[in-house]
Amino acid sequence: MVRTALVTGASSGIGLELAKIHAEHGDNLVVVARNKKKLLDLKDKLEKGNDISVLVIVKDLSLSGSAKEVYDMVKSKNITVDYLINNAGIGNFGEFVDTDLKRESKMIQLNVGTLTEFCKLFLKEMVKRGNGKIMNVASIAGFQPGPLMAVYFATKAYVLHFSEAIANEVAGKGVSVTALCPGPTQSGFQLSAGMKESVLFKGKNLPSSKDVALYGYQAMMKGKVVAVHGWKNRLLINLSRFAPRWLVVKMARRSVHKG
Image 1: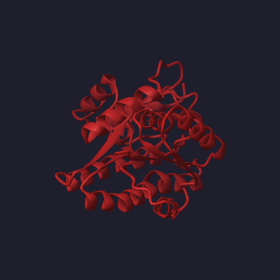
Image 2: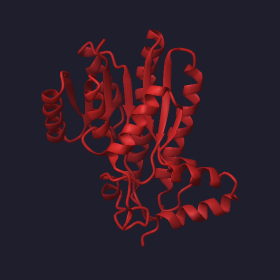
Image 3: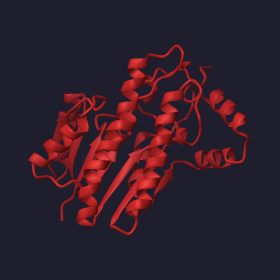
Image 4: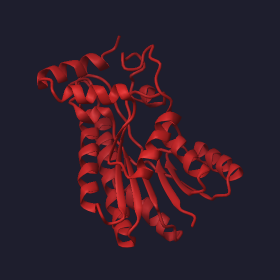
């Protein structure tokens, strides 16, 4: 049976690679992002290279109500979403007193509000059918507070904890929820978040979006609840559990400041 994956933020980075992976496994796709040209190019490439169909939905998911608009469009096409991948997200960099509130409001809507609404809409159908998988792209940032990226870290903490909670609720119902937690990755994120000079990225040999996407796909297919990419990231997270909170926050700031 041919299945369908809905991927948000599919025009670049991890989302783009996840779309490719699903196409390679014979899944039809619904790809969502703001960049129409990139999505149409992706549709053309994936449909030519694989025996699948790709529905393009151009949508700014940082706007309230956008998730329902995407859902309604999918339903109008009589498409059943078997894999929901909430990958779209944005960040920003700087002290909270100086950063732009409008961008942070959009960040909260996109990273938290839209993701939650997508889960609400599609999870009900999955539970009713008795099958389906959700991947919410969180971050290792979700395990700690993040000075200089306070709102972004907080949104990813929400994604992590929310995913773990609903994964528990649907256990035994044929549905799984996975929180993918990458560390710094080669993608467009650092540029859009204004972090090109951050020590998180500058001069680092980072894992590729393809590597992270493949790891996330495999974790989702296995039904893993929390999937932290990279042994160094897993070690860091475990060590932080035993450190005093003040030290965890201090080290988090040191890890993201501009070098």
